[in-house]
Length: 303
Image (cartoon, rainbow, N blue to C red):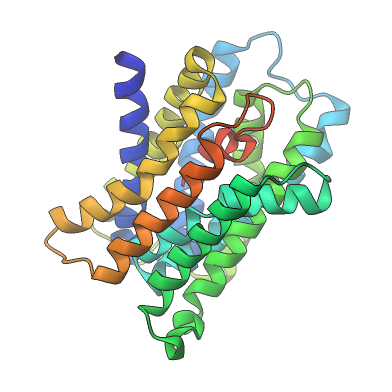
């Protein structure tokens, strides 16, 4: 019961990022928001790493480039796409597009790593993409023009995180999840800091307490606590069973939309259900060997 409650809380934390991030960007630029979030998360994760893994926290020579690569793809590129995409599309649409990451990862794994792509996964892929298309276009073909670039940025996020996951399968041999997350977050924060310097600065000129609370929420709840509880769930229940809770993220995002007084459209509701059904169909019965490096790694981005 405790594990289920913690994993449900993680799904809520990650769903909350879509709304809190959107509200925070009313006062902060996307890159500034991402930079501050992951800087705070990195500062928090480092003491946690040293405390929990005192004998293995130092990076070895052969781990430097892999960890930089993971930081560039899973933190820097993913969050650049995520926050610009969130700004241009809105919480519900962003959550539905991001929810397709496991399906895109499975497809790319089949193409790049020659992994098996089953009929169940193919059906799940079609359902998921149909749900994304329905939400993005609102049922009208003429709206398939990327909504001012927001969907293009989200597409970058999806593919960069999928490549991050695939690369991680090869590079993260012998590197613990906490160590990989701490170093990837630190390198990613450096990249986001450089981007923020040229786009909106490291700190907003004017911001309210609410925006800084939003940064704290995304850093501590969605990234740090989300990471800790997610990995406890994986350790206790295994990756396959734990990954099911990822499918709750777009549903909770939709629920938060209702709670905050917005009325989701029929297309958003239907599209969300299609994506959740597609991902569930494709992943819920995978074996421990094939499931969710995509799901297992999602916590590292804190999405």
